[in-house]
Image (tube, rainbow, N blue to C red; front, side, top):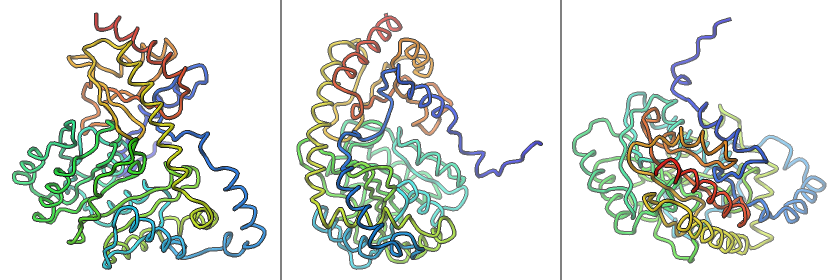
Length: 396
């Protein structure tokens, strides 16, 4: 039978990246392509203890239906956490628990964006968000990235010259895929421009706590006096991704609509993992877990940087991350890193080509993303060496 798919899903194409990640999962391949946190830092013993207690003593709470907005004690705990950590404390805001921050991006788009309206994004940006926006029929405007975040001058020009701009999507801290962080000055200018032009901001902040030196800039949400910022948070990178607990902080009117969207989507996020997350926050110091991650990722990133400096051709430009999980590299010129990837996979090393992260994924890209969080130091060094040998061969 020939199936006629909706226009909505026709705009979503994850086949290319799925094939890349499938190949990268081969245990014989050194994969610098992932985006996962380090599994050795999962607090599995603590979570096992909590799950055991809950299933024995609170079976109705953890196994029964609940409200769409999420487990109230967890919502209150998150409010305390983000107030103390990031000074996010607007009384006009509310919070909803989502199945990861990806669902939060989806709900924000579903509730606020009409087909044909414009979303401004950093270019490159998180491919999961691009896929989501495409599925809702968005028009894209891309803003190039600089060493201190998006080019604000270009963003301001887009705002002045383009019509129908509804949303700005940004990952201000340790951006995926570049690892770049938006400077404090640019954050303030960005917020001001959006506030003056009634542009809503989706602030995606899954990596914000993973700063190598402990220093953080203000979140856009902490500046939000106009109710224009939809803040996406997640426990995927600071606790464990498999629990699928994320959250959205936004104006109460937006959260009300998101709760209605969630009711018709999956009713509510799993109660077991919601309550487990709450109990972890209550019983243990998540700050200790985060500090372990900062220390490990800082050391792994240094190994990656040192290896890139040693083995890559000098013509390959790269970012210098100060946190997060990723580094962005660019061969320059007319190279196509999808084709380069195909050559490198033969040498048993993988990365993610740059094209899927851009607003024009069918165009050639000379850039690629490297991840340093999951491989051992030895495999990072070996993987970069193998990749560097191939780059020297291609670029000579």
